Length: 103
Image (cartoon, rainbow, N blue to C red):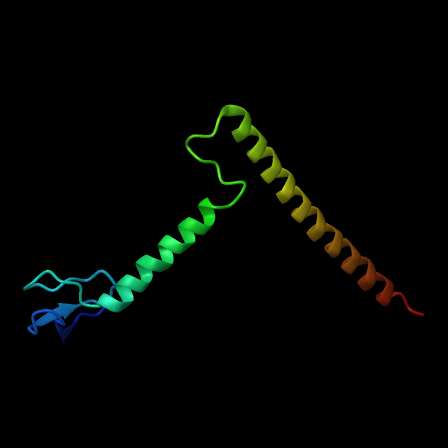
């Protein structure tokens, strides 16, 4: 990224900024993009909390049988998704082949 100078919102002095959310002021070590940085941190925290609140999330305190159950249910779910995709691909191929038959 290219560097440019911006005025620090904390100390008011000019400092180099590379355009990153976690860039800090050279003089006071404050964040240059405080609003965007806090929004990015909140978004990551929300995504992590949403993932951890899911039923199939394997927590560190889960027992062996619970982990096996959650992994097998997850694998079965992905198998179902891939099976649906395969079904639609096969139906599409059949429709295309039928439409190519001179009639």
